[in-house]
Length: 214
Ligand code: 3PG
Image (cartoon, rainbow, N blue to C red; front, side, top):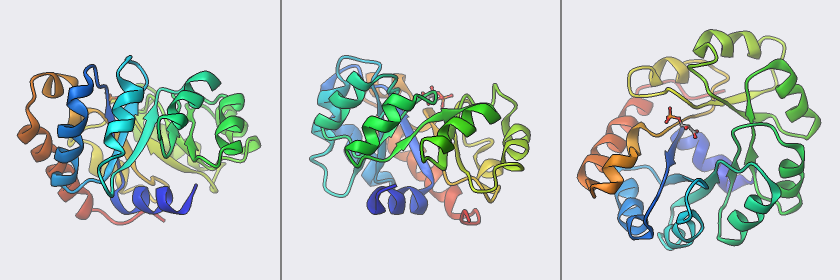
């Protein structure tokens, strides 16, 4: 990982997974994240607005903006040219990883099995997104996966909320957790920026009460 992305993710341990449908949401959302104490965003490339949202959010000083749901090289190219500082994929795609590396952009590929982890390691990646975490057995599966791969750190995502966040973060191989609960699409669509700020602040407070990752 590049030093700045590494530092911000290690310090904050949260990746808010965002789906923006309207670019007008980008700037108030960036402000709500910062006000809640979380200078990190993962803008998923599932909507037409995503590239422009990344570009607009990058205007907020100190906010580390990544692109999520990157499943092919074309999307990776668009995300990076829009200013994405890191990429997240739902699966482990060697061509996408190689492209991100060639551009010097950190990438967190998704894994759910030992074979996926092996592929990530072959591509030179040792920080992976465990996705979809809860559907694939949650913390028990993560513990089993980390046994044979002690060098790997995980960013579990999928089904995580304030209810199970602390239990994931307590595992020494969990670097950070991702999720949409802080920035639910309905809150963005209804412009409920105070609620976004409050959910972000609550998650940040919960992280502070947890032991840091190894
Ligand atoms: C993702 O894209 O990483 C997931 O959809 C986020 O999962 P969640 O909505 O269960 O947090």
